[in-house]
Length: 314
Ligand SMILES: [Fe+2]
Ligand SMILES: [Fe+2]
Image (tube, rainbow, N blue to C red; front, side):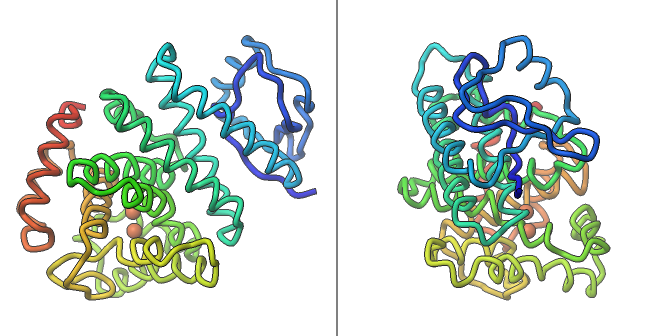
């Protein structure tokens, strides 16, 4: 039997499960709750705090789980009585589950569709709740979750910047989807090369840079020939490390607004992870280092977003 991972935050207590829920325990998959059953509030809270616990469904239940999640998401996001923390947790869970599936099986259409859906939900939460962005950026990164957390951060912040720059809803959703999967090339790199992700860009040797930059093309290779991956998503992913000075991996000097937004936000969040600088310091550094790499007006609008969203005081 094949298993697909899921985040427990996408399951709600006292709600009938439409799939069998498995847990990975002592090197084997055990059925934890059966279809038709529901988790008690107590059990659910316990599971949520056990960070080591990993949950799964069988591949044949993927559709059932996705329907369950879609309904739960739309109910949760549209309910004004549900607090923003719960909305954020659920959308993060949906996005993390989808991305984890993409990392494991980049060719899976259902994982891709789940990613698109998660990006849309992310937009809804970010644009509809003034505190949501701050909540997402305020969360600590769990061990071994750095790339997933980075992808969620970039998705949330890029969508916000896209709204400020008056992008259309379709453009925002493309940016959001591309942001979630933009670094799947990294998880698929040779394991000895993965530490390059954690090294400050300034410290990479030319050889390391060449190896590291390969993840943009690798991502495109993983997704090519998939009719459901649109050309604009492909472009966004392949060009997410490009800068206007032409020193990116593809040496592009002209970027669409969406590409520039994704590249800028990716650059910001990546610096925070690798350089371990505070948001304020990171922004200051970027205003110097990235001059000529991004449109000055865009950099200033980005600064304004960080200020108004309260992301500089985290
Ligand atoms: Fe990247
Ligand atoms: Fe990235």
